[in-house]
Image (cartoon, rainbow, N blue to C red; front, side, top):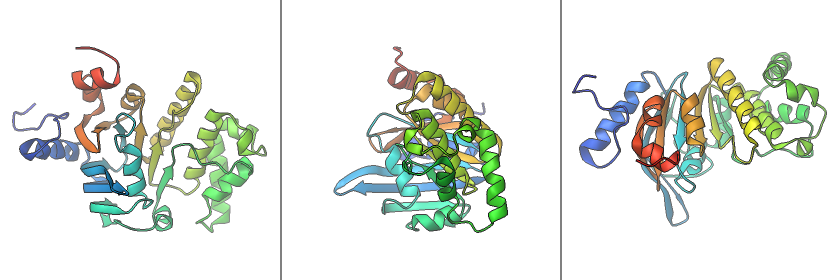
Length: 268
């Protein structure tokens, strides 16, 4: 590595350290699709996100890891317009989308799979998929996309007339991703897809995430299971107490002593 090149997992902090981390992040995302600059978000009087910088390149799978309460879900809600931005800028495909309402972002190809899945429990799988395509009017293409997501999720096709509320947790997570895919996203935000799932189902869900990424969909993945997230990602960010503290290539973060001690249960 050239001595002038910042370390890919340089810690965030004040002054020069923050600058190095930002440059490392941008180096990994040469064609940015999503850029957060000094983004700050609050819940009431509590500042949950304290001025973070994140870049996601077009076609990348990037993870955001950290403990409960670190600000990961809040960050996704801010990107999607579900929380007002206190300070900073959100750019998507080169356009400033700060403060845009959520429904306009879905039409621009930005979709969120929320924590807890957010199923319409009384509706069938087919009906949930139709809700995912609510902003579209191209009926023939919608029918084609239903078959496309069923090819990705054959388990859902077998149960297409079953109500979502009767599915297992893993099946509901698959349906949540499939429903988001019906909007034809360019950028997919995934919030804690492994939460509450049995290990075997977690593996299947992450296989699905890789399959979606292989189709060219850019993904920003929020996940508490740091090892799984870093295993499937190109790059990663670590959040602590509303701040990004590490950023770099996923493989480097996976072997970083601080990450291994804090999130993989290993001691130095």
